[in-house]
Image (tube, rainbow, N blue to C red; front, side):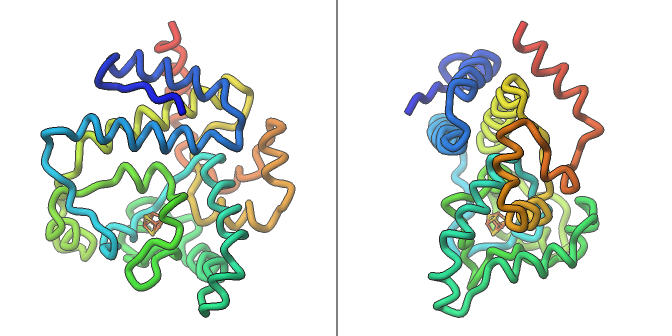
Length: 239
Ligand code: SF4
């Protein structure tokens, strides 16, 4: 799979190359390209940098509001449908957990969501059960100090040192994907993950509507006030 490096070309050239690759990629494969590019470039950018403290079984930051783009939402929704029966055989109903969390958090802004300190619906026994398909927002959130992260999640500290490479690569990959979706006439904004997933799961036609240029997840949209500025930024890089 094509993988350009933001270390080799500089951020703007990386953005342009990756956006072009997204524009040529079938919608169902977009996230595979995005995750592949994210993982490869984080590995390159992290060489010689402090190692991250995140590890399997540490869900301390998974109380934050998570945002995701439409192809991420539909990927997670498909994963939930595909794994539901196997998980239910073990007494785990991720969709029921998701609906309960959505009912408790819908409409909360980022700060209100943090203050609630309620864990993500997909954390079971400390493990993210959608880890393979988790959104770019989760992938790009990597702490360098576990104690600081745990303290912040408990409301006892404000400052957590985060991995710069993870953040930078997440922003570049997500922005390139958004610019490509916009270029293709597809809805490219971000959504609050829980609400958007409930919408995607409840309407089996939602994915097709999005592929045809609709916005079936609109009621879960966030940050639309920055839309014009973001679009202008994408166009500026294009020039
Ligand atoms: S999707 Fe996974 S990584 Fe992201 S907040 Fe939920 S449990 Fe944490």
